[in-house]
Length: 169
Image 1 (spheres, rainbow, N blue to C red):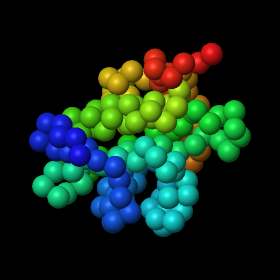
Image 2 (cartoon, one colour; image 1 turned 180 degrees about the horizontal axis):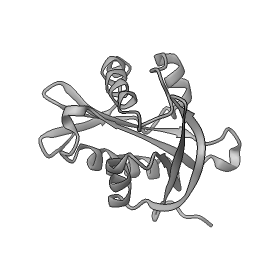
Image 3 (cartoon, helix red, strand yellow; image 1 turned 90 degrees about the horizontal axis):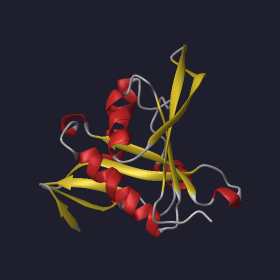
Image 4 (tube, rainbow, N blue to C red; image 1 turned 180 degrees about the vertical axis):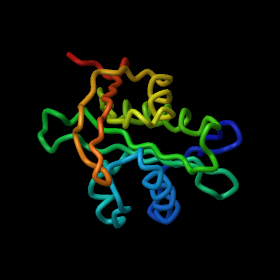
C-alpha cells in the first residue's frame, strides 16, 4: 500500500464494491459524470472493466475515490487503448484525490502496456476537464449532441493521453 498525502492508494478489491458503487451513485446524481442512470451490478461492472488498473484512495478505512479502465474495443488492434473512469466521493472532491488516483492509474496502465488513455467528459464537468489537463491529457475534439440524458442532448469532450513510456512503433 502506497501512502500519498494523508490517504493511501491501493488496488480495488471485490469487497470495495459497496463503497465504489456508492461513490458512483454520487457521480450519477450530479447529472454530468456519466450517461448511466443506475449503478450496474458488480458482475456487469466487473465484466466491463479491465481486470488490472482498478485502484482506490482510502483514508481511515473510508474510500475517497476510485479509478478504473475499460477497453475501448474488443478488437485486438485496440488492446493498448483504454477508457478512464475516475470518481471521487462528494466530500473528498477538491482535495487532490483525483490527481493522485489519475497519476497512479497512468503509471499502472503503462506497466500493463497501455499506450493511450482516453476520456469522454461532459462540458459541465469542469473539475474533470481540469483534472485531465493537469495529468497530461490533451483535448482532441467534441462530439456534439452524442447522447440524451434525461431528455437533454449532451455533448462529450474527448481527451487522450499518449504514453511516453510505452512506445508506439
